[in-house]
Length: 329
Ligand SMILES: Nc1ncnc2c1ncn2[C@@H]1O[C@H](COP(=O)(O)OP(=O)(O)O)[C@@H](O)[C@H]1O
Ligand SMILES: [Mg+2]
Image 1 (cartoon, rainbow, N blue to C red):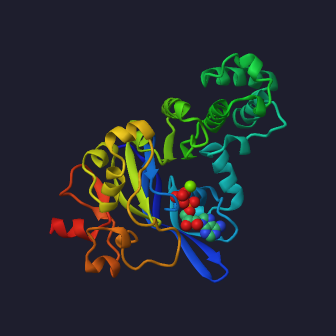
Image 2: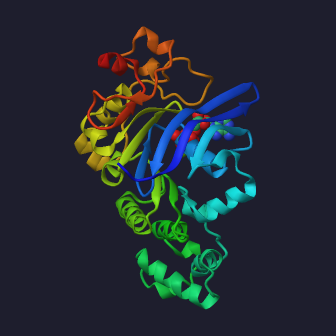
Image 3: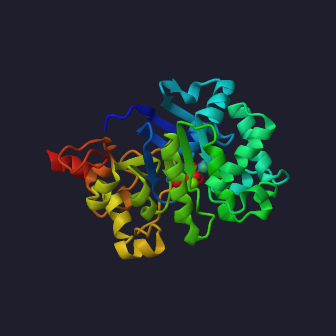
């Protein structure tokens, strides 16, 4: 891959202060996103997926603090003054949340909300912006767009609202779109359509996507690359094809085993691995998955496995696992 690197996370951490100590939600993540690529981030609930995205956007809760580096075209988002981050967030980086209703103003007509963005970002006149808003609604397949533009958000279905959000997020042709389970609030039958549309529009605008999802079917169809998160760390990162055909990390294997192919097509959800998913907590010395891992060795609980390239495995991939490191020796 020769595409230029857009975002480089280096030792990214997110910690939350608690009344009786601290919890580590993201525990030292190294990850690159290339211009225009679709990177999937998967993992069970509580693994830190959302906090990775929030930290980049300066959206951590008041008791949260990000550490390490998040270099966006060489500029560290974590140490950027608020005003500069605001500018980047409007123009170069966009985010779509789970529930589109929380991001739309319920009291303003949908067409006016889109037009507003066009006036701010593209400098269009009000008349031109209104016309363009209708064109965009049409583009995201909102039927009878000219009429719909004059309606309020509550008059739209959930799927239509999320399509509007996607259109608005891509308005400024951002270089990076952060999408946090953007379709989980929607009817299963329309989730795939909405995601396909998002990927299609992003391809047109050349926008890279970091897509947090529970849905391995979505990953297989849309993502170029996948990072598998557990306990705030990346367990495995690989091309989507390589990950599905030959998962290496015991955690990834568990995730895929728990989701038989046929069932994956039917339910489009992650299954379950025996044991309780780790969620927050203090610092882990070894591997966070060790307590649930059937291949656990002594050093897995005492020594942090390096997240490193494994040339002996298929595809370009990095895995954090002592067992796999030893197999290469
Ligand atoms: N404000 C907070 N205070 C303390 N812990 C938090 C806070 N917000 C999130 N967390 C913890 O961060 C961890 C990761 O959460 P999250 O990124 O939302 O997981 P995911 O998106 O993968 O389901 C969870 O264990 C969660 O409890
Ligand atoms: Mg989440």
